[in-house]
Length: 126
Image 1: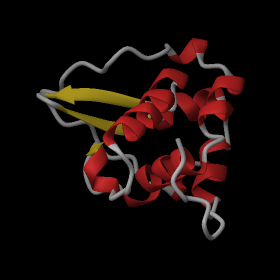
Image 2 (image 1 turned 30 degrees about the vertical axis):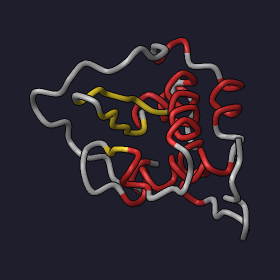
Image 3 (image 1 turned 180 degrees about the vertical axis):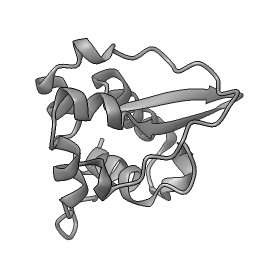
Image 4 (image 1 turned 90 degrees about the horizontal axis):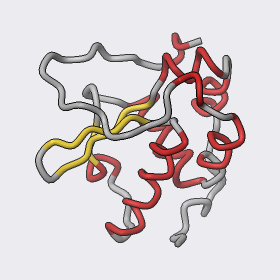
């Protein structure tokens, strides 16, 4: 199902990923909980459909949110196992764990990629 979105090859010399659950410990209720926010769904959908590089900083998304709010949302995605984050100096960059999620929950990412936000769904949230 990953044919619907890009999976870019891993470049050499990447920093180690930040702590995340191993693929065998990914839990559907935690993944769905992380994806329950329209903002987080939008983040994952954009990474799946619009990635220009292997991973992206939060500025790439162009979201009009306070840094503390964005940090919370990116952390929720990482801790649930939806995204992988790496620290590049002061910047954290994210990518979707496509292979891991497809192995654990076949079809889930295709649903996320096919999702379209309702008008106004991305109004500021806490």
